Length: 368
Ligand SMILES: *Cc1c(COP(=O)(O)O)cnc(C)c1O
Image 1 (cartoon, rainbow, N blue to C red):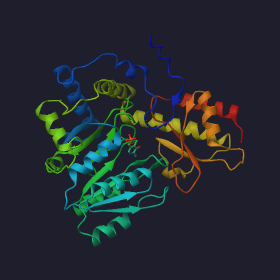
Image 2: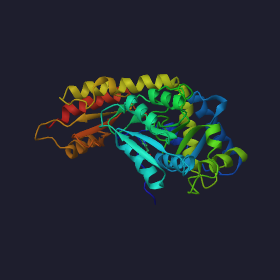
Image 3: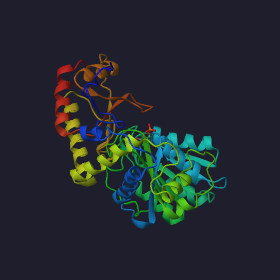
């Protein structure tokens, strides 16, 4: 006998995977044939919905890619960079660094421009490079830098890309669906996100929203077969929703349910407001136990917040983690290299009331 799976014993205050609704999980109770029309229609509907959410219109197309979000980032880099391309990666955290690592391993010409975690990428410095290094063809950056919770203001960089005729790639992994944006103004040529972040699906695939003209020019570039974004798109287009290789069918069905729940909530702007309400409720609860956020207010996002560890010698992240877990909340360790931090995510099927309960739990368990 396989034991019964218990209800979720805790909320995931982690930005992916995150807490999902019972109905999203419930959408996974049947099996699907990966090449049957019933299933392919679900895929096509998702692709259409994603373009709708991005404001992309007919010049844009959506490609789904198996794996976690990083696989989708890597598929863009394998497919869209040629030997004579040169990408400028802007980095102010672990995910920008990861993008740099991917292009380095692919072996295309690249340049990584870095700022301290907690500092906004500076368009002035980017423009200077664009003026002096005409070999650059692409600019890549992260929107919501999940390391710190910083919302990078990508718009000035996208405008520079427009002005200088470069292709602009945005890792909007932890922001798409939770922060309103218009993919056409300023132009984002390739936007990358995944199923298990702000759309509130379960993990299993990522997706790329691409300007058709740019994606068409990527044919034949990829040296990775399974991560070839153009081929994946071509198969999905030609065969109306077919993936080239085994697709995560249950995850895909759950994702369609998650999209319909996003609409029920009132769309991206309503979700954005809830995430901010979560953030404010969280900040209040933490302040009450003398814990302060790492970033100044104008740089914070409604996605995740990094907190400075209290200076008390009694404080330990491991103890905090275990005590909060026992109270029904799972949190995230820090990822900032120059400061002791920990992180609490506020995206997913979680509400301001949950953060009020978290505040009460913090008062109860306080040991610093
Ligand atoms: C979650 C995330 C990714 C992808 O991480 P995976 O673990 O591969 O899903 C990439 N970039 C950012 C900014 C993220 O938040």
